[in-house]
Image (tube, rainbow, N blue to C red):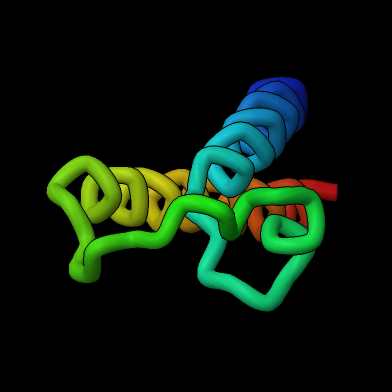
Length: 74
């Protein structure tokens, strides 16, 4: 059972890394420093961006649950 949660933790960690990097920069951070702020957004968030937010939150909850489960098992 511990192996299942460890694998789940690794997979969700990598997925979280990819999902966070896919988000659009909000300005004032490292994304602006390296040219990420060149394209100005028209305003509002698109459906794809909202779905990306929801997916990131869902994966984050699974990630946190797997950490708690591993902590309880170990």
